[in-house]
Amino acid sequence: MTDDQLDLTFAALADPTRRSILERLAQGEATAGELAAPFTISKPAVSKHLKVLERAGLITRSREAQWRRARLDPRPLAEAVRWLESYRAFWDGSFERLAEHLGTTGRPARAQRSGRERKR
Image (cartoon, rainbow, N blue to C red; front, side, top):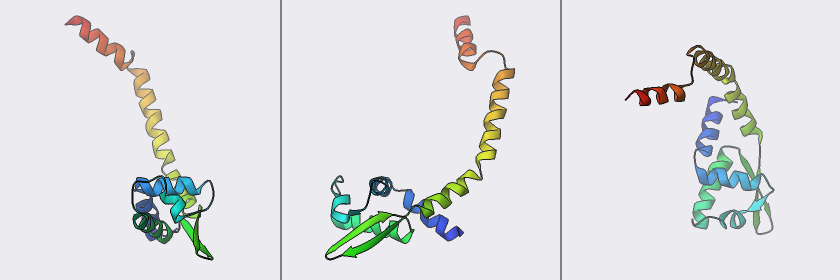
């Protein structure tokens, strides 16, 4: 995946309405009207969200008679997950170091705080 495509994917995912639309499309294809139903925004606003998702490659749209149906294309999401996974070793190591640190300090932070409060 190119950096530009990754940027488009994360920019599209940054909006909660677009994430909700993707969640709905994970259940199956839908028209813009069906996707707009649960929101308090206008159909043109939903259409703009769909264009962002389509430009990012997260959805595809097809025309059947007068209906335009949208469907999820998971490939950009899979690429984003692969990119995020590259940082897993960093986070796993950070959590392991934190666990080691907490193990060497003796009592948990909560117990230490309680002890300090008692001394007052």
